[in-house]
Length: 345
Image (cartoon, rainbow, N blue to C red; front, side):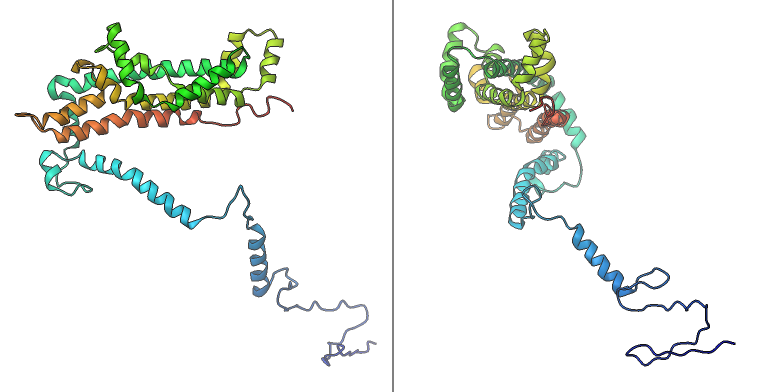
């Protein structure tokens, strides 16, 4: 015979249900905030508290590598971006207009009719296709001048950073002095020298001065000293590798980011070069694009000259397209840490 038992919860006065000997007490749900029920679920208050704690734990602290965003710096960067892209936007918009549309419409918005493809065709065909000739001249000056300047800068910078020879400090001083001298200060002496040699009004008058790049040489010197470990070169020499093989198989891949940087600087400088061709070249057949577009702009000011401002704007847009394409193609070579892990400290 079973006897019902009653008990009182301590301090509460609430009677409990009777139980028989050997019976398992009933599971009692817990409803306190932030606790679990017998089903294993949290109450709403506990879930909210736990989620907030998890969010606070996941928040990454601000460090020098993960700085706090700066609102003034963001605003300044935005203004610089607008200042940089506004001329390009103006050029693209006005390249779609004809001569009348340039004068009658707002400069930063499109006209009613688009003449973009018609302007490109007229630019390439105007004056028996002289624009194409100027484009080929510019490519010649860039390939021969900027390409040669990059090769000489890479070879010279690697040699100055790797080999120790008498007069190395003097060469360093000369290179720094050459970097500090502006190109315009050397224009007149260069013209007189090339005039005595009979090279003015020829492509060599533009190509040969473009081969000298003191800044490119200095940049490759510093980059080679930092990116090519001496231990790696010594290991290659111990393994029997010659100097040329060591340079082309080991040093040159490590120098690729600096090489691309010097190449782009040299290309932009040669592509936009105006003053040197202006004093060296008088034959329009050897004009680069900079002089050619300036000649089109000047013919509107001559008596009986035809104003072709729409062609000048379209030609200017076509002029910057190759440079943008080269930047996009070569940006993957701008990598750092290529020699990381090659030498064990």
